[in-house]
Length: 338
Image (cartoon, rainbow, N blue to C red):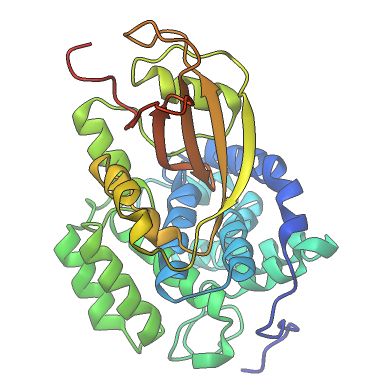
């Protein structure tokens, strides 16, 4: 079936202006999550996964930003689905299924009215298309489906398969992998499916960049690196390591993680790796570094600082240091024996 919408070219314009909508998107997603226990955090998990897939598929920063926002908003059309259908504790009937199938077009119609969201609207419209052309709403096939929508389709499916419903348990990781493999070239773009399988293996089929760290952190009693959005969150994150800090950061900087890191970075990368962080996966990305003054360093030394590097609300690195010429630098944890 011919496409009913105008799709953007593969070369996307700069998307930095979209970041002004971050708080609005968070509010919309929270409102959607409040309607249905199943969808609670679903959009966040899908958004986490598309970041991993975007990195694996070597998308540009602009493409990744666009896709990440589309992931947060991909189910916005469900706002028009009746509660009796959205919250039904069991499989849907044919008429109810038809009602549910309208949500990609509804989401498209909502988003396309905002000039800055027109490209996002297209990705949302097509996130239920299939590689073999048997998806909806427009029956697009293969490469006619926007790449972002193909990535969304895989991430959305993984979260659906690994979430429990009233009428079925969550799939195991192994079963989910088999479904992705079986439907590669049928439901899913083979390249995206292959990337998902590689990422799933690396992250034990966890849900998105930082989720693996979050699970490890939870098991060790350390704070989760995910969902660190505000100054209060950053302070609370440091408090999770036992640090007391001044409430406002000493400095906030935007840093570019180098595309290639020579041996001069080896010690620093090793320090981050020892804490469960992998800076190399953010090569070429612009991140924020927040510096806080610590007021309870065990030796009583004044002026000790804590740095947090954050990318898309996830802590991706950090350290504690003395800014003196002969000062020290170590990980975020309290020194042993303190």
